[in-house]
Length: 101
Image 1 (cartoon, helix red, strand yellow):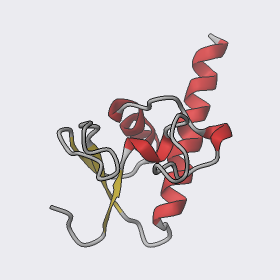
Image 2 (cartoon, rainbow, N blue to C red; image 1 turned 45 degrees about the horizontal axis):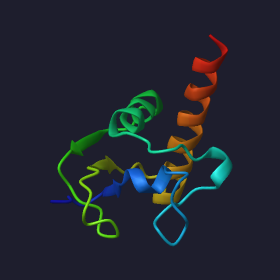
Image 3 (cartoon, rainbow, N blue to C red; image 1 turned 90 degrees about the vertical axis):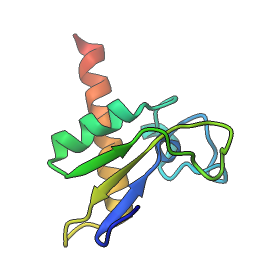
Image 4 (cartoon, rainbow, N blue to C red; image 1 turned 60 degrees about the vertical axis):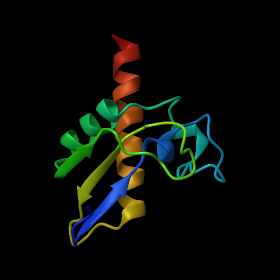
């Protein structure tokens, strides 16, 4: 159950194979194909944000698929959309670093 001061992040928010109608919340050029909870939590850890994982959660728009979700503790200066964009950019940056090695 969500606590006060927490937001929920679903992998569908970052998925390049999803449309905005299907739940993607970021531009396609920084989205990733089928992002995993692990990849999202790596980005959250690098950003220094507190989080907890619920791995068997079902995204309401895709009830046939258990994608999991992540609760993220809000900081006073951040909104949900800012956190989503920061995570997406960190995931893209990590992907680029892996390609260069």
